[in-house]
Length: 54
Image 1 (tube, rainbow, N blue to C red):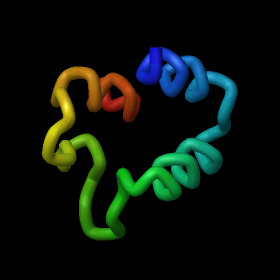
Image 2: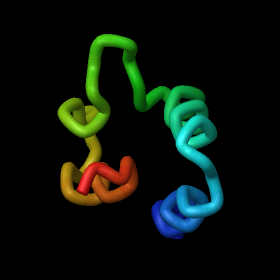
Image 3: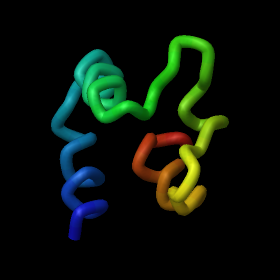
Image 4: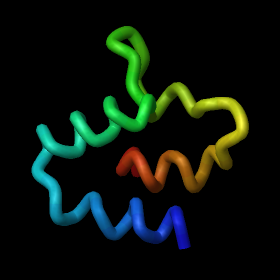
């Protein structure tokens, strides 16, 4: 349910809002591409889906 809520959120945000949302959630680093840097403990496939990498 938790992941589904995050996935449902992305389509209603514009690109700048998604970037800010990801930053606030700690998924970004100025030097890292979030699609290449899956945080420890996350399922890579689901994380990349959540980050709109595919």
